[in-house]
Length: 313
Length: 283
Image 1 (cartoon, rainbow over the protein chains, first blue to last red):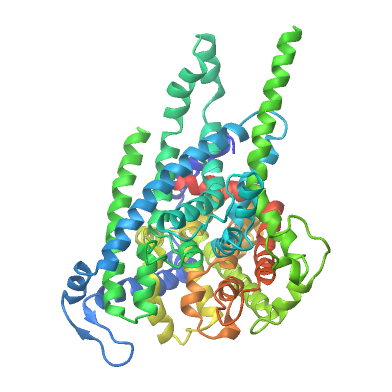
Image 2: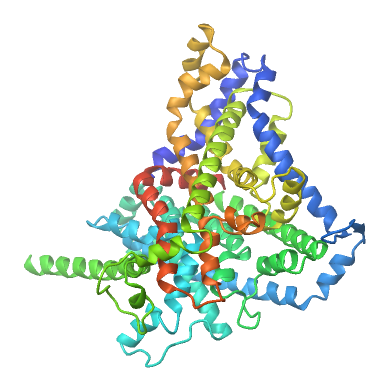
C-alpha cells in the first residue's frame, strides 16, 4: 500500500518491454507464445466477441423464443423510443446514480479520516468498515430486507427503542423510502471499497510535502486543499468512473430489496432489461435495449478516461 | 503541560467514540444476522424482535436442510462453481499472462486489447447473447458453462495482473533452466511461478469471491432447481410466497452465504489490498 510498491509495479512493464527488444530469444519462438495465449484467445473470442456480435445482430431482428428470427430493421429501437417503462427506468437509474455517487464519496471521506489516523485501533476500524464489501450483494440485500421489515426488522425496533418513531416506518412502502433504503444498503456495502482505494491514494502522497507545508506554516485546511486533493485527483476520477458505472448497472439490490416497486418506481435499466428478456421473452427488444446501454456506457467511459488523463497531467 | 495532556486525552476519547460508533454501525447488521440465525424458531419469527437470543438453537439451519432441494445441494453447487471458476481463472490467466509477458507473436496487441475490452462492455448486456451461445455449446443450465462465463469476466483483471507480475521477473532467472534443456513451460513452472505466487493468490481470491457471490448469471443460466447456487436459494426463500416467510431460516441462509467470504478475506487481506492497488492502477 506504500508509494514504493505502487511505483515499482507501474514501471515494471517498461523494463519488460526493453528486455524483449534487446533479447531476441522469445521472438524466435512465436509459436510457443501462441500456445500460452490460446485459452485466453478461445474464451475471448467465443464468450465475448461472438456474443457481442450476436447481441448487435439480435437488436435488428424479431427474435421469438421459438421459431426463426427475422430481420426487422430498426423496429426494436423504435419500440424503445415509445417504451415508457424503459424511459422511466433511465430517469430513475440516473437519479439513483447521482445520489449514490455523492453519498458514497461523502461517507468515504469520513471513513478515510478515521482509518488513516496514526492512533491505535485505526486498523480495526478500517477492517470493520471494509467487511460488508466482501459479502455478496444478494446476501446483503436479503439481510437488509429482513432488517427493514415492519414486523420483525431490527431497524424499526432500534428507532422505536430510542423513541425516534412510535410506529413502524415502512421502509419499502413509498418510492422515496424504498430508494432511501437501497441507498443506505449500497452505502453500507460499498463504501469500504471507496475508502480503501482512497487510502491507497492518500498514502501515496510523499510525507515530505506535508512537512514542508507545515514548516511554511500552512493550516490543516490549506494542506488538504493544496496537497491532499491534487494528490488524489486520479484516484477520485477512477472512483467516479467505477461508482457511476456500477450504479448505472445496478441489479441485485433492486431485484431483491424492492423488486422494482412500489409500482415500478425503483425499476432500473438492467432490471427492466432482465424483465424484458427473461420474463416477457421479447429478446429482440431486450437486445436493442442492451445495445443502447452498451453504447452509452462506452461513450461515458471514454469521456471519463479522458478526464482521468487530463487530471493526471 | 497538564492542560496539554488533558486536551490530548479528550481528543483521543472523542476520536474513539466516533470511530467505535461507526464501526458498530458497520458490523451490527452482520452480527445481528448471526445472532438471529441461532434463535429458536419461535423467537426468530417473534414480533417485536428480541435483541439477544434467549436460548441457542440450530433449528433455523435444520429448516434450511429441508428447503426445496436442501441446503446441502446448493452448498455443493456453490463450492463446485467456485472450484471450477478459481481453477479456470488461475490456469488461463497464468498461461496467458506469461504468453503476453514473454513472447512476441502476431496479433499480440490486438488480443490484449480485446481482453481488456471486456471491461468496457457492461456485464449485464452480454448475458443475453451468452445464454444463446451456451445453448449452442450444450452448456446451458450447467455449472461448467456458468464457470466459463465467470472466468471470462475475470480475464481483464487477471491477465493484466499476471502479465505485469511475470514481466517483473528477470528473464535471466529462466535462462539457466532453458539452457539446461527445460521447455518454456517448464521454465515458467519451476522458476517464475514461485516468484509470482502472490499474484496467483490474488487472482484466485478475486475469482472465488466473484463466483461465490454472483447472482444474476446463475439466475439466468441455471433453470433447474438442483443446479442452483446459494445466492439463488436465498432469494428464492425470500420470495417463497406460497407460505409464510421463515425469517430465521433466511438469516441462517445469509450466514452460510457470507461466512466463507468473511473468513477468506480476513485470512488473505494482504493479497486483497495488493489486488485493489493493481486494479486502481489500471486507470
